[in-house]
Length: 213
Image (cartoon, rainbow, N blue to C red; front, side, top):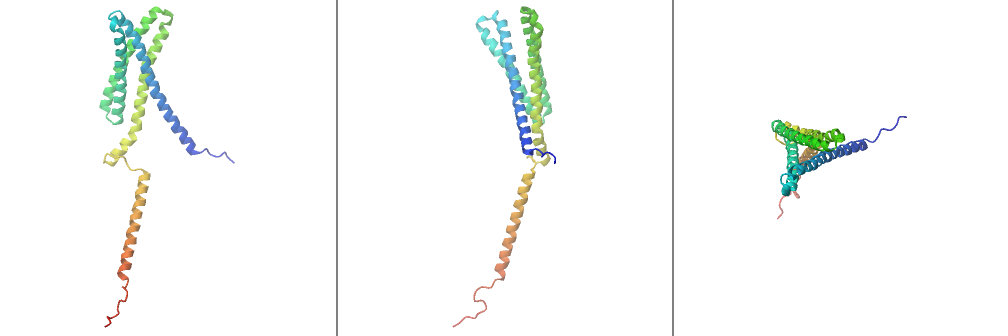
């Protein structure tokens, strides 16, 4: 005898769990690259403004990375939303903006690698590779999230468009409930009709007896 087939529900649960975990890892990794890039930008601008405006160096070094990474995150959210709604024009526009901000971050990391590489020449190459990986690796993760969000929203959107009402197409469970409800209403209508027929043919008590005086 062959081996019993594994429980389908267990397989489905494992696949669903893996999918949810992979999505969580995608989000955490993307946010992690944003935070790491922002931290490196902080040290970069702290050195830049430390010689120019010492009193405001900390403020500028903290605000500039925060603004840049917030813009990257905003572009990520906007691009995901536009593609999930099927608006490719706006989606590509915000995606181009995200590419521009990412390229700017890559240039910053190159300058930082050159600055630190001048102090530690033996580590110049590894520093440059790590910094660029953080920036462009984060961008690749952004694309993965955008594709995942758009792919998840596409079936629901196509179902809504297929009905022509802007609402999702009815599922098999909805059709089954509607069928049962229709059958129940039909049975009730037949029962009412039978009761009316019986009431019409039934003779009242003492029917046919003449009045007595």
